[in-house]
Image 1 (cartoon, rainbow, N blue to C red):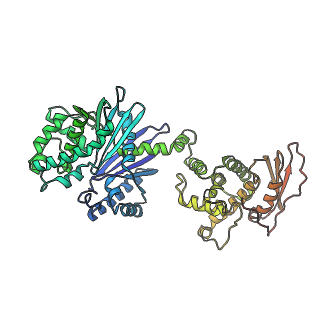
Image 2: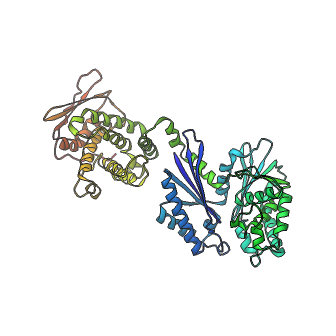
Image 3: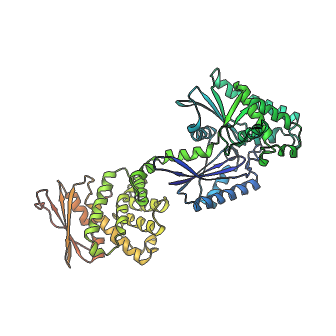
Amino acid sequence: MRVAAIDVGTNSIHLLVADVSAEGQISVVEKAREQVMLGRGGIGQRTIAQDAFDRGVEALAAFKIAADGLGCEDIHAAATSAVREASNGQAFCEAVKRRTGIHVRQISGADEARLIWLGARAEVDVSDGPVLLFDVGGGSTEFILATAAGPRMTVSLPLGHIRLSEKHGVGGAFDTAARKATKKAVRKALTALTSRLGDQPIARVVGTSGTVRCLARIATLARGEALPPHGSGLVLRRRDVEAFLGTVEGASRDAIAALPGMDGRRVDTLPAGAVIVREVLKATGAAQLTTLDRSLRDGLVIDWIERHRPEIDLQRTVLDPRARSTILAMRRFAPNERHARHVAELTTTLFDRLAPLHGLPSSDRDLAWSAAMLHDIGHHIAGRGHHRHGMYLLQHIRMPGFTAPETAVLAQVVRYHSRSRPKASHDDFQALPPEDQRRVTRLAGLLRIADALDRSHDQPVTALDVSWDDQAIRVDATMREGGELEHWAVAQRHDVLAKALHRDIHLRILRPDGRPADRDDVSAGTDTPGEPRS
């Protein structure tokens, strides 16, 4: 199962494509980053500038093409401070939805911290005491205090490298005045963190995000050490950060850009980010931190796994993606799984026994089973008109494994499983090709009989025997007990199949000992009364 996670940040939009195994293990397929600067020039005004707005939509459109090309089954996207604080943040999300179909969820600072922890927890060592994990973003910084039992505290502060650079920068240069103003603002904001930490001992500090890793790369090279091919495990000392700040204070932009290890896209904002890092280390009494190449986008993948655990678990036992989609939709929308499975068994039995008459390809047996499993999902919306609601759901939810034409047939079969019958006035039915209209009529006819045979939802039928001749189809249903309601229901619903196969339909109810119940046979008719709504 392949999923894409998109982190819509203040500075950059990140894409992570990963394969998720049946055991829930993650294997990274692709990573990408577009620096769109949604927050640049707009954080103070609480708006996304139009040029950044357009860049963001285009970046997400490109990521959608990449995700589709890589065969992703789902895309999980979240937007952080730049979007959630902007007056046109919702308009941005709506524009992305219209352009790409991607739903971008605006997450709170607390949820952002939770997702960062989800992404980082597998690689954070908490064996010798609490760890403070922090992530410096463009608009905010998230802090997570974690122990072996999990997060103990999360704090989100409006400390971002873009936010501080725009508010306290002087003429685009990081001079002494800018450094002092930035430090003052950071120290003031950090009181909200230190007051909550109190005397809590911290075993180590871990930093994630591009800002922290860039500072660590610069410091590592300055010490004459080699860089690993990834961004995890680098050591950044407080004195390294202080040395960096001393170097960049009053330096030209070109001089800062020329520093070994510098990311050219961070030249204007890394000094402010360094102040945040330095003050966090000082406030916590830590002499150094280690870096982690894990972030919110990794957390989004894990969050997706936790949200889709039933689907992932099914991968181990159900190999057919169409069957998985069917079971998941049934469990999501239809609470009576026993009824759905029993009707599916009856439907496929009728499909098999009547194959020479209905003439449908054997592959349609799977469609018959899926329609039977899903015939009652419309009750999720309302009982009245549930057949139409079921059609609507199937027209609008994702059903991986099914082609669009198959989904259209499936939706119509569900629509016609009870009261409604195919009519020329039904636009969705008429939009189907003639061959698919024929499939719908026959499959719906089978499903109507099967559903009627469990009208009580008590699964009374223990066996079915079907025979036919040129005039009639005979269905012998062995039942444990009762059967009155099922007998009546078949009388109301048999007409669609009878017309499609040009034969009368007779139902005989048998008791477990093989003797017929005291019940009249059901015979086909052209006008049948309605039934009570289930």
